[in-house]
Length: 296
Length: 264
Ligand SMILES: Nc1ncnc2c1ncn2[C@@H]1O[C@H](COP(=O)(O)OP(=O)(O)OP(=O)(O)O)[C@@H](O)[C@H]1O
Ligand SMILES: [Mg+2]
Image (cartoon, rainbow over all chains, first blue to last red):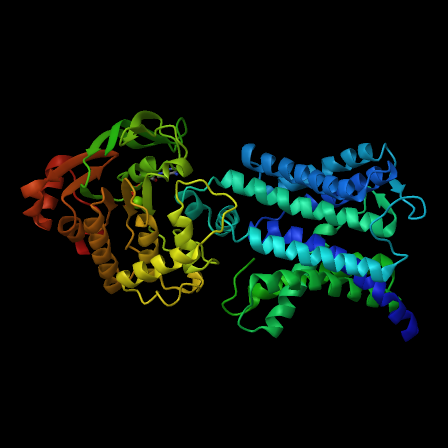
């Protein structure tokens, strides 16, 4: 349990935390903008990873691999959105159904293999844990670009319509917004980003695994809430949408560093998920007990 | 401008809770008519308003707005023709969005929403002017979250949103019922001003007989899913609460049972 070993693990923790933070940006779209709990992400994260690794192993260039992973995520979100809006099944159940079904789909994508590796020596990967500084830089570039694009998008007419839908269905309809469409777009974009992060994670760890997305929703929520707690502590009066998105990514990094710390403390790794669940539960509960606070 | 032809709406059809909320209702509103709607609790006032707005499809009959048959159009498509203020001040605006963003959403009602910027600089100037006219003290708070406003301010803002693009019909469902009397009176006055300025065809449900008499140029009373009284012109101008109660009892053969309406 030497300090040196902890410090050694930090850069890798930052790199992985950044990728989880990017995924949390996707969760933010459904959870905070649309105000729906979308459990598709556990499946779509793995879908992104599966698509990325399989295409990489096929020798396709990076500029094909990552857009394809993103598009796969859009399709996952489209499925959840259609089940929710057309079949009138609650969003949370729609997400669970799609996530469950995606397990089979992901196995198909990986030709029935539970995991597929893409060794950086043999294949062209964007980032890898063998070069952590590069992985961190790529993570930061993705974060910067995604934050700028999200900031722009949610300021457009359609972006505002999606925000209005999440805020108030009655108002959105009265203002002529087709809330089925805005919800569909929200689910699609959210899962597109999640799948894109799954692709980054798969390259980073040099393999994709059909269960690599297990618990992704909880990690996403943890990142969002840690980010909100931090931003509220720093900016008491609230902050711009740019900063809020930045804090979501930061929340992912902080979350993962906490995990690194817990592991370093030699907490049994099988207890990690329980620890995360308890942390997220407390974080979700706190606003409900604050005076005048509202439930999320 | 608005034509309702033989509209019927039954809730929970075929169950023991079956309720005929609209029973073969017909009503025509001319352009610029400001109709006030009054009636006992459960008479079908809100149901009629929701039928016009398209909250759910009606069971039979037709609804026309201008030359458009909207009977089968979903609510969000009808919104192109309709401005609406709800009874609940929280329902009409998006709490987490800024005042100017709410207005910009309303400004685009019935238009295609694409990847253009959601609110332009010129619009901001326009909204500043409009809010100033409304005299809510909100013109300098364009980028305040709507959730921070009082109920009265939110209702007035919703009214501005409903009329920022001239609607073919303005629907108001007891939009002052949740406000304190002073604020309610102010919002009603603002309503009157906006309606007159834009010559809006207006359908206003109210629980207050005095208001129903004082505002608008036509009054209908509903009972048991039917329109039982329709008063316009001179007769409407000379109406009093007593006369109205009298007419109601004759028309329906029962006593008026809406305490708020009589006391208010
Ligand atoms: N969505 C619904 N489902 C079932 N029944 C409904 C529904 N909406 C209205 N009703 C019933 O239809 C009848 C008419 O209701 P409505 O809300 O139109 O009355 P109202 O005239 O607006 O009364 P109030 O003065 O209380 O607002 C009532 O018996 C009501 O219970
Ligand atoms: Mg009503």
